[in-house]
Amino acid sequence: MPSTRLRPLARLTPVLAAVVLLPSAIAAAATPLATDVLLSQGKPVATSTVESSSYTGAKAVDGSTTTRWASAEGSDPQWLRIDLGQAATIHRVLLNWEAAYAKKYRIEVSDDGTSFTTAATVDTGDGKIDDLGGLDAHGRYVRFVGLTRGTGYGYSFWEMQVFGTTDSSGDTQAPTTPTGLAAATTTATSVALTWNAATDNVGVAGYDILRNGTAVATSTTPSYTDTGLTPDTAYTYAVRARDAAGNTSPASTSITAKTAAGSGTSFVLAAAGDIAEQCTASSSGCIHPKTAKLVENLAPAAVITMGDNQYDEPTLSDFKNYYDKTWGKFKSITHPVPGNHESYSGFTGYDQYFGAIAKPNGQRYYSWEMGNWHFIALDSNDFVTHDEFAEPPQITWLKQDLARNTKGCVAAYYHHPRWSSGDHGDNTDSTELWNILVANKADLVLNGHDHDYERFVPQNADGNADREGPVEIVGGSGGATLYNLSPAHPTTAKLLKTYGVLKLSMTDTSFQTQFIGVDGKVLDSSPTYTCH
Image (cartoon, rainbow, N blue to C red; front, side, top):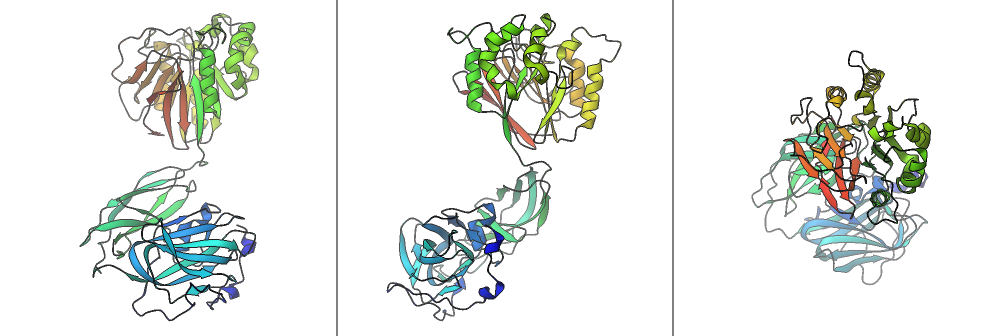
């Protein structure tokens, strides 16, 4: 909402609004009862809409006249509902309007948050401070309902305050102050908080989470994940406990948590290797049209292929007649690597079909980036026949590329897997690639070659389970005839002889994978891994 809408400070002087109330309403600004207390501050709020995440409903009950709720623009009716936490007798409601005020609105109350009755109706609001006193309403929920806007914007007020007395039977003891507040996990856009449970003479009803001194949420358990945050930013947190009578503990000792660096973006990738046999959709046994349909349904930001894109010794005409008719529709967002079948024809068909996409730097190995991820595309054919007495140029390049990387997460992909329970088995030719990636804290390694699906737990250079190592996934399931399986490795998390596509869900600090079968069903899901 544009800052030009803000009124001059002089208009915020607490004078009474010149309102006209319907006969059913109570006269404004009656003298409050001596026993009345502020019931609404920091309580949970629900709204019909918000203009943006900067103007949430919680900001209407945070005790600050510099933060506000704002509904979506140009639409009636709109509402904001406050949960007082328990039933109460309500004697007064005060609305401190921003420029986007209501000409007509109602104040309603409810015992269950669903069925409401009217406590006050304003027909001629003028956008000043509305102090509706002398009410005699009862309920747990209090709702503002805007009926007619006074401007072309939505509805917006700095504070909505509800005064009265609770129905609590003498419980005036507040819960103990929560202790042990800590940030368990942080990402670029979230902070996960935990704390020790508070105690109460009757029972703790919930906790208020305070971010930078303002209540932003409530939780019924001693944990909460604050989301929608800005990357690389420090936030101060505290929590306080409350009971069903509305008694609130002091705020806990505050902590500071900093979100991870990154763009705050997330995206989905699709990946597979060993894709296009020399067949078309006219044959029911042709698989690559079906896996291409899976990719289309995923609508990925990019596509990764792990070699053997086209069979059998692919020429340019083979690529055009088969691969191009299915997976070719994603060519503009594809980042391929070659497999051993592309090498049989000296890579001619592969180079001609993909062009600069396959060799962006003049080599069949390259890197690219998206979000906070650095992707490394490698040509493992180099290591099947390379001179073991001299460091191959690709290894030199790989070391330099990793040294230059500034992104927080790293994924690499190439055709020949270091570890595999498929027909080809473990590939020692890829040892040097694997060891370099392990040493440089790579997070994810994708391969093809074996026509199956296999996901490993994180492994070290020796192939032993190690949470500091990368997750390797063999995804040679894109359409070529499947191979038989060998006994699974001790580190194998899932091994399948079936077709499908790998879905990669990436954030600035984590990733999660799913294997989608040709029937659209999820056949395997990994845990969410945090980048090293």
